[in-house]
Length: 149
Image (cartoon, rainbow, N blue to C red; front, side, top):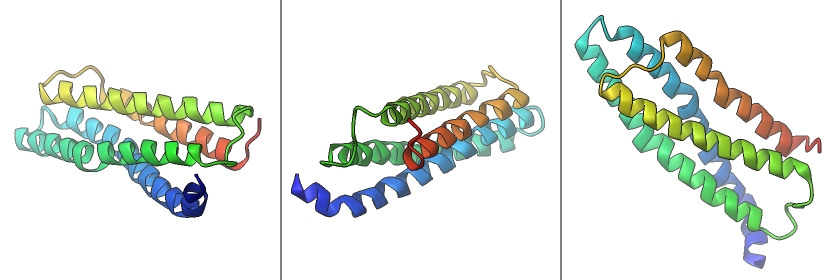
C-alpha cells in the first residue's frame, strides 16, 4: 500500500482529468438532446447528425471517462490515511457520485429512445434535466474541498 501513497498525486491527476471529461459530456449531452428534439421536424439529415454526435460523445468520451473516474476514485479511496470513513462528507460525496452515474445511465437510455424516434421529454424538459449534473458537481466539490461535515 506504500505504492499508493507514493503515486497518490498522479492517481489524483488521472482521476481529475477523467472527472472533467465525464462532466463535459454530462453537461453537453442533454443539450444535444434539446437540439435533437427541437430539430426533428425541421430536417432529417440534422437529426441523423445529432444522433451520431450523441453516440460518439457517449462511446468515446463519457463512458470511458466515467469508468476511469470510478477506477481511480476507488484507488484514491483505498490509499491509506487519505479518507476518514467516519466523516459524513465522504458519504455525501459517494452518494452524489452514485447519483451522477445513475444520471449517466438515464442519458444512455434517452439516447436509445431518441435514436428510435421516441421522444419522452421536450426541449424545455431536457434543459431542466441539464441542471442535475451541475447541482451534483457543486455538492461533490463542496464535500471534497470544504468538508463541511
